[in-house]
Every structure is written in structure tokens, then in C-alpha cells.
Amino acid sequence: MLITSFKDLVFEAEGIQEFVDEDYSGIEESPELIKERGNKLSSFIARTGKMMADAKYHLNELRKDEVLESIEKILLEGKLSAGVQNALIDSICKEEQFLLDQVTQLNKTCKYQLEWCRSKLSMAKEEMNFNRTWTHGK
Image (cartoon, rainbow, N blue to C red; front, side, top):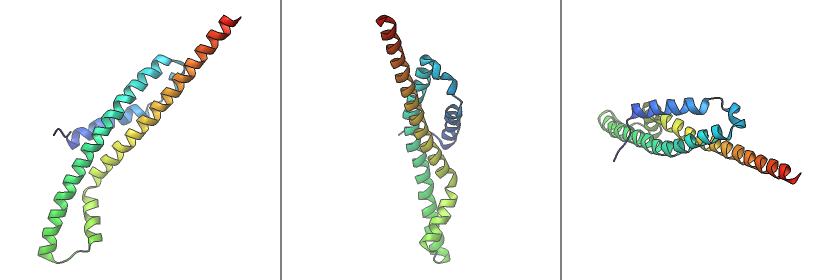
């Protein structure tokens, strides 16, 4: 099983974040640029899906380790409520949870931006058909 390291996932997520944060409003007049962006977004959708699984793996691994550690402490030191245990584990896992949340959001953002690309390409195609019909119709 190939799981991308936590550090590599963070680095890759930052790169995808930069791409989706780019101002792409100027490309709406160029179907080629829209198609190029759409192709990148399509690959990012697939990649962020895998990244979500990897991030969840890292989160669950840390949670498992922390649960085992917490159980040992509870047995040695006395009882902690389940709520306190969960809060403790959640605070320990905050970076892994952040990465999972970020990659999940990147996946959604890529999907939304790809839909924008599809809409713009569809509009450009309709304009071309209209112009062709209008020109040939005269």
C-alpha cells in the first residue's frame, strides 16, 4: 500500500492551493486556456481524492496511537471521561485533521472550477455555432 507521507501531502496541498487561488477570470475569452485549466483541474480532482484517503490514513494512525497511549495513562493514573479523552486526542491530531479538511476542500474547489470551465467552453461553443449560422445565413 503506497501512502504519501504527511510532509509530502502538505507540500502538494500547498501547490494545489496556489493553483486554485490563481485569478483565472482573464481566461474566459480563450477556450484553449479554459481547456488547459480544466485538464489540470481534472487531474487535481483525481489526485486530491487519493490525498484525502492518505490524509485520513495519517489521521487515523495518530488517533489509534493516541487512544492506546491514553488507555495506558488512564489505567495508570485513574479515570478520564470519554469527552476529555476525545478532546485530548483531537487536539493532538489537529494538524492531521487540518490536512484532511484542506484536501477535502481542495477536491471540492477543483470540481467547482472544472464546472466553470465546462460552462465557459459550452458558451464559447454556442457562440461559435451562432456566429457560423449567422454568417452563413446571410
